[in-house]
Image 1 (cartoon, one colour):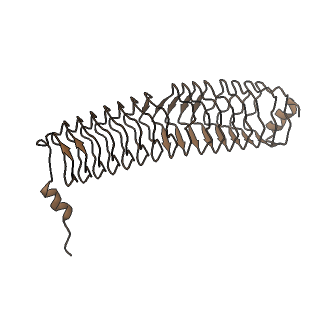
Image 2 (image 1 turned 90 degrees about the vertical axis):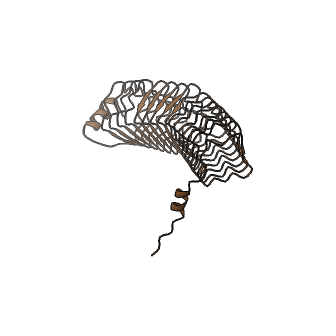
Image 3 (image 1 turned 45 degrees about the vertical axis):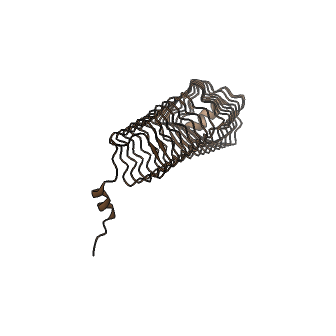
Length: 349
């Protein structure tokens, strides 16, 4: 099909099916609003091509360079985009559904409100790119690069990020649900206001990381190193922190309700005003920790070490303290009898 006949067909609203556009120079062409099915663009010139509000289903764009292409509100469905590149492309509201993007390059691109669903992003590069409200849902991410990228309000769902390149990346208000980050070195990274709900970070290194306002609800952080982390106002409800290292970190005003901190090392840690209701702290070390106004109500602190800890108004209401070690707990609060009566109250009918 020649360029002029293609443009004429699009103007008449015809669906372009099983066409071979390989080698055709479509640079600067306006293909907006078109529907392409099982069409090959291999070797076509697509610099500056306008694909706005265009649908491409089962198309072959392997190795294509879409430099400065207008892809606003474009849908790619089950397309072959291996080794494709998008330098300077407009990717606002673009959707990639079940596409093969192996080795594709979005390096330096701006991706506002872009969607990748069930795509293969193996070895794809987002280096130095800006991802704003991007959704990556059930995507393959082996060896994907986010080096130097800025992520804001991005959503990852069930992504394995263990081999993703993250050097120099910053994440703000990013959501990572049921993701795999076990054993990753995230030390010193900026992970502000992120949500790691139900994600696996067992054995991960988060030492010195900026985690303020982040959530780790039901996350697996067993054996993780959070030493020196800045984690004020974080939520660790139901999280697994058994054997984790929190030494010297700022965990003030955090929520650890129902968390497992057994054998964790929180020495010299700031837990001021944190809530550890029903937390398992058996064998944990709070040596020299700041626990002013911390609440251990109904927690299990059996065998925990509170030596030299600051315990002013720290609450130990109905807390299990068998074999727990204290240097001085005279300023701490014990069982609250009135609260205990209220908790034990059984209405009479």
